[in-house]
Image 1 (cartoon, helix red, strand yellow):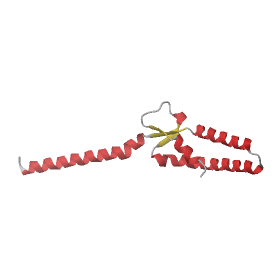
Image 2 (cartoon, rainbow, N blue to C red):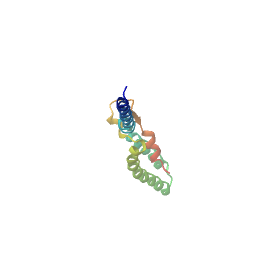
Image 3 (spheres, rainbow, N blue to C red):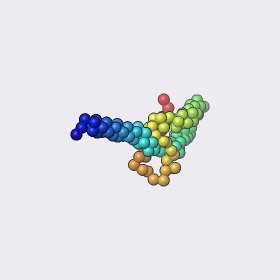
Image 4 (cartoon, rainbow, N blue to C red):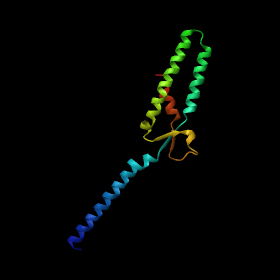
Length: 122
C-alpha cells in the first residue's frame, strides 16, 4: 500500500472517530435529557397542605395560633410557584402536570415528592 493511500485511510478513520464521538456526545448531552419528562401532582400537594392548615385552624385555641396558621398558609402560597419554577432546573427536564400524562413512560420521573420537600416550611 502506498504512503498516500495509508495517509488517506488514516485521515478517513480519524474523521469517522471524530464524527462518531461527536454524535455520541450530542446524544448524551442534548437528545437524552430532552426525552426525560418530569411529572408533578400539584393538586395532591395542595390538598395535603390544605388539610394540614384546616387541622391546625380547627385545633387552634387562640388568635395567635390562628394567625400563625394563616402565616403558614401565606408562606406556602408564596413558595409553591417558586418551587414549580425551580423543578425544571433541578431535574434538567420538561415538567408537566401528572394529569396531562396519559400513561407513564420509561423516561418519566415523578417529582411530586421533590415538590413537597421544596414547599415545606424552612
